Image (tube, rainbow, N blue to C red; front, side, top):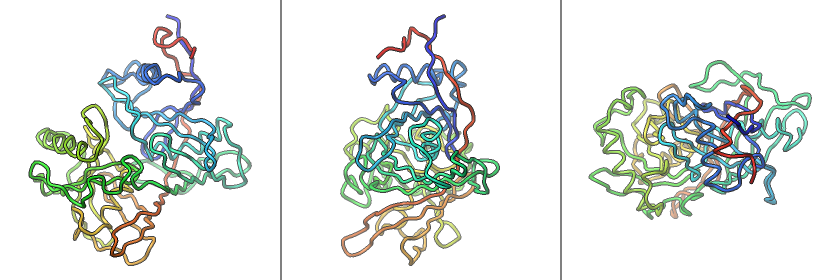
Amino acid sequence: MTQTAIPFFFMRGGSSRGPYMNRADLPQDRDSLAEVLVAALGSGHPLNIDGIGGGNAVTTKVAMLSRSEDDWADIDYFFAQVSVEDRLVDFKPTCGNILTAVGPAALEMGLIGPGGARTEVRIRAVNTGARILARVQTPDGAVSYDGDAAIDGVPGTAAPVELNFMDVAGSSTGAFLPTGSTTDEIDGITVTCMDVAMPMVIARAADFGLTGHESREELDANRDFFTAMEAVRLEAGRKMGLGDCSRSVTPKFGLLAPADKAGHIVTRYFMPWTTHPTMAVTGSQCIASCALTPGTVADGMMERPNEVPCAVTLQHPMGEMQVMIDYELDEEGFRHRSAGLVRTARKLAEGRLFVPSTVWDGRG
């Protein structure tokens, strides 16, 4: 069978992984691009056995990079979430974990050159328009993956990648609170619909009869919960102006519960049809902002830090993630300025991946 070769880097970004490719090496037409990504990842099989996906939503993600024509950015980052089994490709969301390796990948591809011992890479998230400043360790003019930074959910340590997210409030819907309210009632469940880096529907775990401390496996086995959650998510999506979201991973869903430490809150994040093993970087910014905003479902769950910017620690199934939020809070309400995180990345492989020429012949 004749196949089409596509250059790629296979990288871990945060607690996700997937192929990173030059946008110029792929079809420009979205429908053709979706077919190529389905074939490359092996979507349509629970193990993605005929592709390089890993049988889980955190391992069926794709980053496509190009030099940016934006006056501010160096690199355009176009993201695709490929489903594990349904042969679906969602171009609506972005992914902050995968974004962690965008700076290193852009340097590896030669789309940008190193700038000393630490290189700043200005990234525009094509899917949402968000701007992110990434700082990548580049001693001796090359990306370094060795270091002492550790993130829960990933074994070992690696070089830190600093991320500062800007212009993320309302990036998908145009509003920090897309429904115009801090809470909405849907199917008897009180939710907060919020758009910070990722449009989300956030609820109290207790309102679903849960503690919020359940493991990923326990939650994934609770199909009654997923049925109830999906009904709330779809109606919330309509209220947020996102239309019919039955075939889209946005809005994402989150559950909250109180923690026993100041500045901490217990979280569970959904992708949305399975439980995230840790926490999404984009989702972390939205949940942390929710925890800081008076009148949301998180109100009273967390003792708000007095300083600004402040650290909010999210407790997830495999540990913790700390998010630095810069914001204003006055009589006019909560206004998000920026969010900062430290993640890690690693290059796993590089070379060419192959798709059948019947899917794409390499032209266009």
